[in-house]
Amino acid sequence: MHSFKQNDSVMITKIENLKKEIEALKASNAEEVEALRIKYLSKKGEVTSLLAEFRNVPAEQKREVGKLINELKEFATEKINTLKEEVLSNVKEDDTIDLTRSAYVLKRGTRHPLSIVKNEICDIFGKLGFSIAEGPEVEDDWHVFSSLNFAEDHPARDMQDTFFITRNPDVLLRTHTSSVQTRVMEKAQPPIRIICPGRVYRNEAISARAHCFFHQVEALYVDKNVTFADLKQALLFFAKEMFGPETKIRLRPSYFPFTEPSAEMDISCNLCGGKGCSFCKGTGWVEILGCGMVDPNVLEACGIDSKEYTGYALGMGVERITNLKYQVKDLRMFSENDKRFLEEFESAL
Ligand code: DAH
Image (cartoon, rainbow, N blue to C red; front, side, top):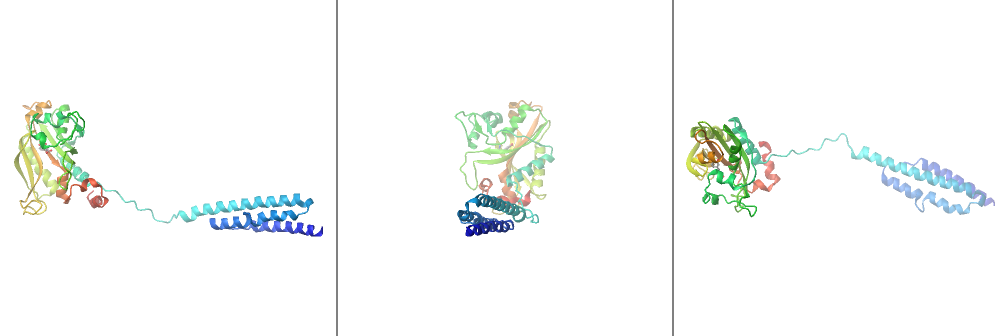
């Protein structure tokens, strides 16, 4: 009997001491909290093992002691949960957010070299009063060929290996941005002064020097009394603005169905200054565009009176101009999206 009583008071003291001990518990991280949980609340933990000793408690005390043990268990569980919450919120405030840390450096993207050069071309013509016009890449025969004075069986149609994208031969990818000339002239009467940048497609094997798509900029000026002298002046202005004030131009007679007379323009080689190098194949000149006076047939096809109005047109490849400015050796670089290549144009923005 005596031993039971002693056992009982020992139990109550044990419970009280454990409660004090648990109340004072501290932890600074999740591992420590887990260690405490194991120490007190796991199967062999100090609180749980009180239940084993509970067997020895005299029957008349069981109610009271049982209640104390349950309360202690609840108390310990709550304490451990509170400690857990504390360390978790501490982690957030103290360890993962360092308000004194400097910000991540976000690298700014770069503009694609072709966009840089296209914008530059458009800006130069913008200074001469040209405004931007755009047209669709999926075109029809009329806008790409027929309206531009290509005869039905004209070999020039073969010159530009066309992609036909359905069985219908009237649905095709434009082979040049000259199609935008027609689109604009059909809708507007002169004066017309437009610059048309865009992507064009030709069925060519892809290599360092050719691609199945590339970019062109077309210019068109139609008004009363527009002459070849106006064209030449605009070309000289463009060449000097684009390649520097020392740049010279020369025009060689050429042929395009949509212009008469037609010419190709060379500029003095901006790599060797005209002395002759491997880039200009020793000639001192490099070809950069085609141009001419708009053929009266084209004006008429688009509903413009060719007796009243004349015009000039020109077209150039953006890749070609970009190569000249930046010496990009392989055309494929422009469409591979290799960041090392693109980042070289960071300073050119
Ligand atoms: N469309 C021609 C081509 O793709 C370029 C061109 C030449 C455009 C002469 C013109 C021009 O407007 O007058 O090769």
